[in-house]
Amino acid sequence: MARRSRRARVADVHALAAALPGVDRYPDRVRDTYQVSGRSFVFFRTPRPDAVDPDTGERYDDVIVFWVESEEDKHALVLDESTPFFTTPHFDGHPSVLLRGSRIGELTLDELREVVQDAWLARAGKLARAAWLAEHLGAGG
Image (cartoon, rainbow, N blue to C red; front, side):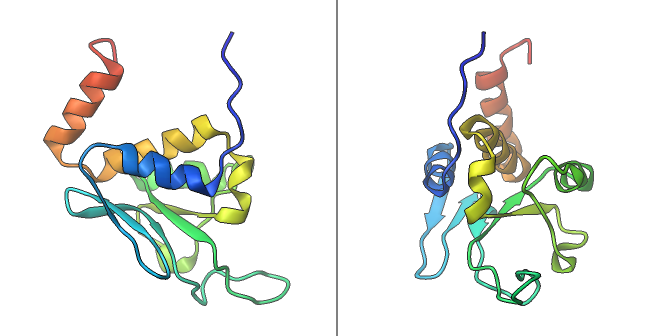
């Protein structure tokens, strides 16, 4: 029987991203960015006019961006109504999904871990990716 994972928290994004190999964190007064191989894979976005509360028009100030491997992966997450992921026209054609920090608790820690790891895998160099997959998936991957 699988153990039940607790609800995810914003602090988990930081911990999970920072724990992956070769990650550089770029803290900023407004947002943090996590990079691997010189490429961002998770970042905390500044409020922008394309992500607003539909009722009040206020800009969301808690949007987190996660890279995904492909447009298909993006659509799978965004179109699945059981997930809190979304996108905006600004990100059309961009392989990433958005998540409000205020909704992160709709994910379990295990679900969030998978999203962060997939974001890292989407941006890591070939050798780093291959080494990580070999270590975590083994020969039977």
